[in-house]
Amino acid sequence: MDAAVPPMVRLQGVSKVYRRGSVEVPVLESVDLSIASGAFEAFMGPSGSGKSTLLNLISGLDRPTTGVVEVAGRDLAQLSDAELADWRSAHVGFIFQLYNLLPVLTAAENVELPLLLTPLSRAERRRHVAAALEVVGLSHRRSHRPSELSGGEQQRVAIARAIVTDPDLIIADEPTGDLDRKSAEQVLDLFEALHHGLRKTLVMVTHDPNAAEHAERIHHLEKGVLQ
Image (tube, rainbow, N blue to C red):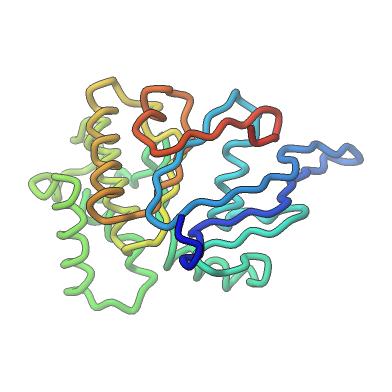
């Protein structure tokens, strides 16, 4: 990584402890991590190893107990909850295992949802939606609802929703976990296109070694410790 270019993600001495009554449950321990802008990196580890917690910290959905989390040049600890919500809307796109599409909305309307929080006009929102659906190859399915789409198509709609705001960082939590092998490969090929073609920074958690192999670098978490 070019020393003159700051990393997209920098974690220094990050630990996370959850409290259940009087009991402290450590989830992450002294994590140091640097992810370059435009990188595609995967995290693997057994259930309970802290993978999803790490994603939540990087994306600003949670705050560390100790340590520094900097993303896209911002120290997330310095932001209020409201500022953090605005920052996430502008800088982070989310992709989940179960798509999280609203069943009553069309593909285009689902993709448009993040744009409703922006000052874009209706016409501008439609142009952004059209461009995002074109990237994932689903322009012809824009008027279909989730129940009319295959699992792979639903996940590609979710990817279009994640990229429609042109975020700096894309967070993917088990994005192929609910897909058959063919659909999973199509989604992973799309991730590689986003990485190589659009130079998006992708951070993915997965249990699937085949999925992880698409990333540039694979990290392993074991009992909250980054190996």
